[in-house]
Length: 71
Image (cartoon, rainbow, N blue to C red; front, side, top):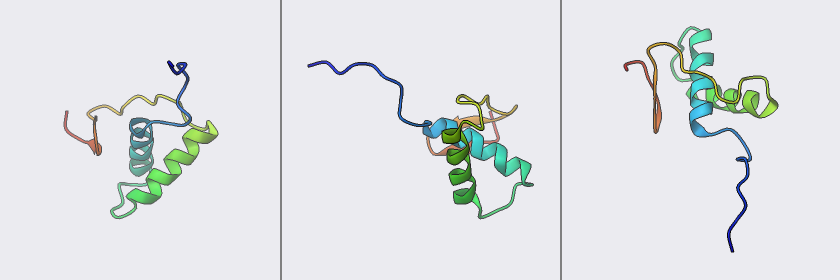
């Protein structure tokens, strides 16, 4: 039996990573707060306070396990 296509139940890891990266930049690139930024980004995306598909900031590239500042 084929399952129907449907929207994911929440934001993707890539969407969260991009949003968390923006939060990190806005807060002055502090070290050691990655988990806090990830959770805040996920919360914002779920609540609809950020775009569902945020565009990457210039010069950024999303990797499977995070965001790199080099293209």
